[in-house]
Image 1 (cartoon, rainbow, N blue to C red):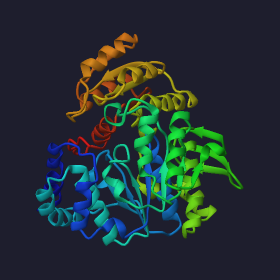
Image 2: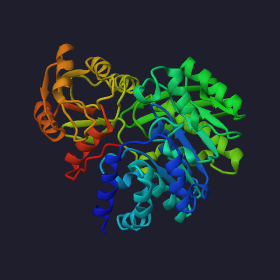
Image 3: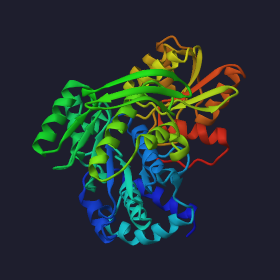
Image 4: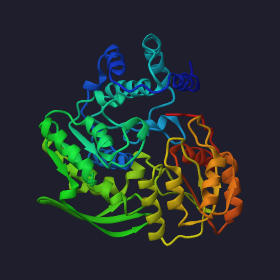
Length: 433
């Protein structure tokens, strides 16, 4: 079995759908010697910002000299992006080794794709003797396969309406699912600001005797912000840090940086020594140290092409504000979305910056049709063409924008992934999770 065959096998597990609950992953991990207990971890959940926050944490820990695992999902172009140590993806040759180890147990237990990949990541981190791993939830928190961890800190970034058919149709219901990662006696850092969600988090922390650190109780001031990043100053209690460069575009990343900073300060009470210099280096060089991309990332210069994985109305609002801040206008927007997303609301927000739109349908079976998306743009009086594929949409957008125009690709991780693969001339395998 070579690497493509091993990854194809893992992808085949998608036909088993998604499973919410911890029984299967616990049995699987027990067969593997419970690797999740063999390294300290930081567990990150949230509707938006968890990928950025996880990357900022991992970059700072790597800068401090800690061998740092990073587990995120979904990937953009390559499966290997999901599992990294000190920014380096798991090696091609290592995937078949772990799939051979896992396959008999996977078949016996009828394990799902996400359970299998999570178990693979945890076994890999344990085998590679990471000093700490930053682990992002897949969906929700309480019943997510990653929630077998007993972390040194739990982190909640934001709560907004998303996956309502699964997580619930109110902020309080969704917060309940996200707060499921909070463990008894383990501190929780939260960037959540919405009142109903904060109440749920407060109650959960109180009942589990978990100390709650909220960035809402501090102050973050944005200095400069453009497509190269931001500078900001932070105060939380008696601690503060001034003029920090954040190497992620968009003023909204300051909130994610604040959550990461509060978490790093909390780690100081848990036996980890991350200095101010480490934090400054990690935040400034987050992309180089982790490989993170996908939020306001400039993927191509001619035409200027920006990719952003915003996939719900809250994230799209942040994106549009960042575009306004950068004084960009009359954009050609390549847009595709999953079937369970509030796409009409997203399109309504994007209409403010759209010169024209290209409606596309990514390869995943979960995608909404390009024709339905096009109709929503027409209802907003935005001129629109139908790709219908991401590849065709990118070619149409390139011609429409010309060398001096601006293309924005957004709506989904899957759309951005296919667009990046097209621009980088790489193969793209369909993924649903």
